[in-house]
Length: 577
Image (cartoon, rainbow, N blue to C red; front, side):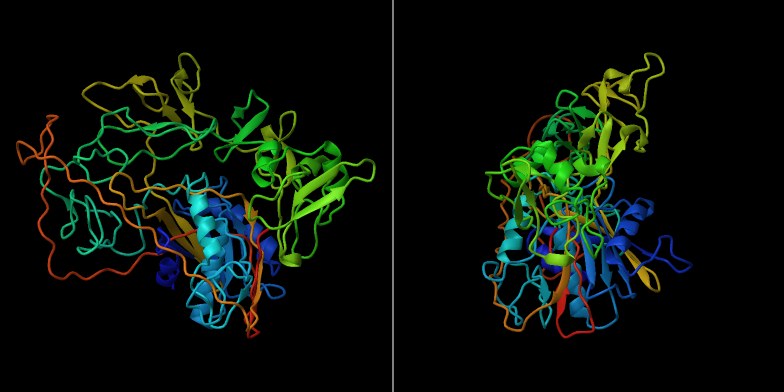
């Protein structure tokens, strides 16, 4: 099944790779409920216990949810910490095409895609006339992303959402295969099949570097197939909660993409870093409407009602009113006057009864199947020493964040020569290394700086009734200078999926990104690898006449919650919240 899901995203430059599958055979480690929203929350809370590093986790179950729900996921959460990039999919063992389409739909939500507008979001070649992200499941089930979904994906790739997808997975559930485009154990490189490979540094037949090459691609590989020098910046700061990374001098890839530890102060100690972003209500309103945060009364009066215009989430049946202490962690309320700038759904304008002030909030066109639309993001400050977490305003001391390494002499975090990162380790400044950045990097030995796991993965689970498949997601960006792109999207939950009408309109097929070529390296004085700075031309033997191409690997993405049912000819999908 994953091979087909893979293909849906691969044509857009995103590769999904299954890195592990977990099966629950003796009992269920989480509370199982037919309420899809509660089930999803339980799985999210459990997901940090999954054994593999991952980008997203998808749980497949043979148990029916209440109503017509057959899939649900958190929206735009692919790189969130703690992990929220999880989804549930009902697998009744019926039509494989429906399972493929629903899985791709939920992954689309995790990547930040909203439901398609059938009048403007098009894709060609679908017999049912609808695309993967349509709110209803067509018959036959669609396997093509719409023009709107492709545009959202590319916008998010260019933003912060894909910051964790720079690295290829180091492990998959299948045996290594030269020519699949994934560098695996025993391979120095893998540029795809002999007919696909355009890399002058890599031998497509052996998946080894050509003679005279140190590297073949990546932000820390020079055009002449040599490593960039230690300390060269390979990933600049994205914002004030990010950490700059540099080349190690002995690896072609930039070290792991880290950002400041959650709840690090930012904006002059008025806000907190969370998931690599300085979270503020002003910033979130700017993102959605281009306006600032609303007055306090919009939160204290509206969010305590539990209606479309103000709430603290959706329990699958109705909007939940906020307790007074949690009002500033419920529905995001913004000043009026702006235009909705995102695909988050619709917006609601509510005039306060005591004044002429209008509160503007993000809602959705999905209706009752929408979950948690437009909430204030986790990590946003809600009072002195208090922060929003899962729509509750909690004391920062109650948030379980491990302490950062401290040097034993000066008792300084990272010896004052680095920053504590989201892995609760020290990212050392150039020239220093070690667990607390106390050691000086010697000129002859360039130690790892800001190193990290060069892999990204996503997970899913199945057990007799439930299965978890662990997947890795990374971007296929075949420019020889760099293999990575970044994704960005706002966090939301996906809506439910429902049956599609038979007269749905057709849609336009997304375009495929062209692959740029890399200029040939300069010629060396000696064909052997040398420590000199002279340039050379690595040579590559001609590819064989024929070579089998291994099957593509599955990958993972994030999406909003969706629901479908298998007891009707047409099923309903979740919409974005």
